[in-house]
Image (cartoon, rainbow, N blue to C red; front, side, top):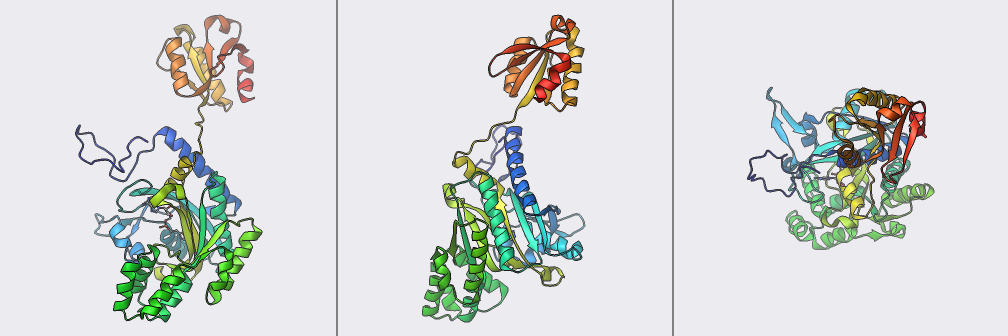
Length: 432
Ligand code: HAM
């Protein structure tokens, strides 16, 4: 990574302009790796029957404020544009996708299954695995509210994590409806803001802060203890019998569908609360313990948002993988990425064959071979060193003598092995 300003001191002694705090440049090696893994996620999404959607990077700030929990505003990158409109860089992509659904996807056959990949912005304190500009790979199933829907979303998230080669991760499934119901039953005022504040404390397990807050609202100590205990309902699928109301039966069905799809490494955890406040039913998170504090690599659940944006109330389920975080976790797990390099690097031995060398390069490229060519008029030794630097697997050396016989020299940079190859067979040999 070129400019990784996460921990960088903004004071810049040599006056060089750096990328803004919490953002990064992705240099070619890094970006090649990211594109490769993005491709793997894309493949999984397509195999699950999802189609891609893209929405603007900035939106009317109201879109995010409307459904926001108390934490959202302080993390929002918002500003007035030249037309005095309140604009925000998207902190996540669920609200934009649902806005796009309300605006123009209402007539599509339901459920609508879409996935997306792109950057999000949150004004957070940067640290390892936490950036101000970060990338999410996410998916939404719009217009369905069944255990099958939730199972599909969880199964796809699990498939993605596995497809990337990760072994050490935990998948926790909860049900926010259970906590919301309990909070209502024990007398917490039911305005959005208050409920969100209580849920946020429970999400971060800040019981010491939640207790006085609940006491102030007149909630009895025994009920507070009961609420805290509920969030500590954690374990294998056997704890589903302890889940009150219909949620237990619902989650049993979700788990049964997951089992049918071979997703068995799940844990039930009623303490999964989620930071965003639009969830209504099943919620889930995946974490990678190797990451320490910022270990959450994926989060999602079922929710309704469309009614806030002027549409009918439509149930949806989705999730987003923190792309930067999951790559970090893979690195820590020792999953290695091998740079792809180039098939061929073409070198002209002398000026009189330089144009012929370009002809050779063009012929290779035309045939679908990745080929680069010396454009610096370097001597053979230096050109070979450059070829190794850019990870060319073979060099094609164009010399006058060989050319006179209709041939070039191909050298394998790994083995050092060198052979003469007829120009008429060159491309075919590379393709093979
Ligand atoms: P979220 O949990 O806020 O959910 O974000 C999803 C993932 O993005 C997190 O699990 C984390 O890996 C990653 N992430 C969040 N903030 C940062 C950051 N500052 N730096 C690096 N990675 C970060 C959502 O955004 C929901 N829209 C997910 C969803 C989709 N729910 C339903 N549909």
